[in-house]
Image (cartoon, rainbow, N blue to C red):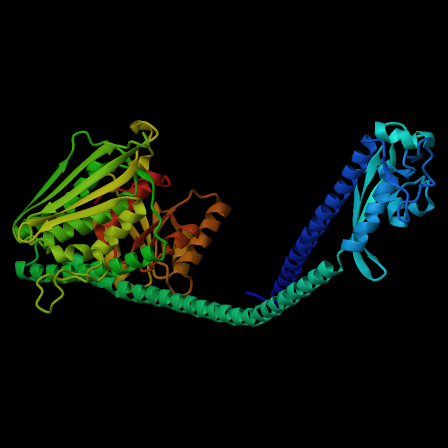
Length: 637
């Protein structure tokens, strides 16, 4: 969040940019002005040099002596003065004399001043000024020219000077001074009057500075005002985010509480109904019990769908990567829906490709959930005919360690109208949303399937024709196992028929009486020896006194909750050197992150309420596959 110091830093940066911009523009124009002055002065210098060379190559020029052309007293040559046959008096004008006269004419006309000078002048008037002396000395050190913008008597001048190099024709006059060919014998300076141009530049520089000052002031005001507004906006956004997070947390807590409070009594209802399903019960009573159990199961499925969509959209659903047998997956689905298809008079066809790999690596539970949703819909919306499940795989072009796993679920049901196909994967969307619809549901199943496919990096397509049927085609990238089948972890092999049927000594810790009784009876009917405890503290005490293969632990309990009881049991195992007992969370907490939290607290597995016999059986199979403490065998009664 911006603070006052950030606004100060912004103002300082803006000030630096404004000063830098103005400085670059003004210095650039000043440099350009000096280059223009230098070019003009250089032209004047080159003109003087050209005239001098012309004079020198001609050995000097003779002119008639008059008021303006007096003999040069500083020119010491034998033939300086001549008289013609007609009696005219002629005197020699050497290059230096001619240059000085040209400078006087030029100064009177254009104001440009030229001066021929030397560190060893013959003519006193040719002595250098301080600036010229410094330039001449720099020539002695190897410089080739000198120039500067200076102020003389309150007026700006541009001074320019280059050295004069002694050439062969020059020796006629300067050999006596000790000069040799190639020596620097002096220089010619040019002084340009540039007062008007400098004043124009200063005016431009002032306007540029004022313009930048105005822009700087506007920027500073904008930084201060905008910074404050930005601070207020960010503060509001921060507050809104905090409120949204608080609302989201409140929603999560509400969902957790509602899930727990709904699942707990539902667990008791379904558990008791499960116990009432006796083989020798009267047919009418069995039908009523079946109807009640199916209604409770449908309510549980709705609750699971709501929690799943919440978990996916919160980004808290993590995929597992474990080896599994795709044919076993298909067998599980077929077994699950065989009775439902028979009840509706439907033929269930499962066709795995003969070349389908024996083992694939991925999230089998999520794939099973996808198939349950799609096959369940196919059965629900197919009044007659068949439901077909096909599976095959093809090699991946990009990755040899990966395959594309294809699943096709087709039915001969009512189909989906073309205008509804684009919406079937949206939440709470159904083909028939009227009050007279024949099929129940809230429209979450396909939305969950689509999001799971996206999470797996796969795709799902649908093709349907009303009155003919519907086909869903799934494509999922799955890895091939890196180790041979014989080296796969034990957990990846499907347990045999009797894997969990051997009697186990179990401790059930559950405070809710109905749930405790229903689960205990269910486990007893499976052939296990079950000891029950009504809270966490009683469960810890039972663990102290006995030895168990596995503990089924409720979470929310009075006196001591399931997490605290688990930590206490783990500490006792470490203190007493006892083998690690498998602890399975048996809980109504089923929101995103709950499973991970309970596993992190020391538990080994997780089963949600209402407890389904199949889920409980699979948890016990996983416990046995992971290895159980060695206890005295129990005899089956």
